[in-house]
Image (spheres, rainbow, N blue to C red):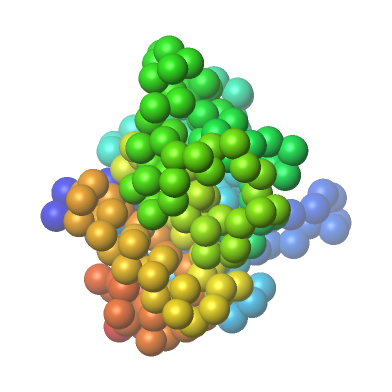
Length: 232
């Protein structure tokens, strides 16, 4: 399989001076094109911090992250972040908290297009409607606000927003743990379908070993900021 992401010797600390605390220790990780890699571990093990470093939401102290053999910068200008966001996107545990409550769904979906696309306003609107329908929602939902949707619908909107610019890697940080069991299965199957349709690679973080076994090609276990084993 062709390598998409390569993380080598990644280290991350929080704080300053004598208060610095190491949260990631010498992390090594690879993800291939179209592969789903699970990341397991107890709360505080560093899973979300690692995900945010890969997504460009955190800087890191040492090591290297390569995407398609291009080394990503450790610190980001706005331009660097926009470039990376075109290739790597992330969805979060709480879909309501991750969506701006003051924006309509149409504005939420078109925002990444305004930052990373040369499409006209009408073309952006049309693409947003297409993605809503792809997620099982209606074009008329473009004018509604996040508070009027269920948790499962909001996570579908979050997935649409993440994928509307067609990134190659989607990082999923506990994306179904806040949802009902029946809705969890729908979202997981949706992600599997998108993987097949788009050739999408996923880094999927979860506490649920059964879900990881069902969804992932392989699973890594984190403990105290280290990747300690392949959990499969």
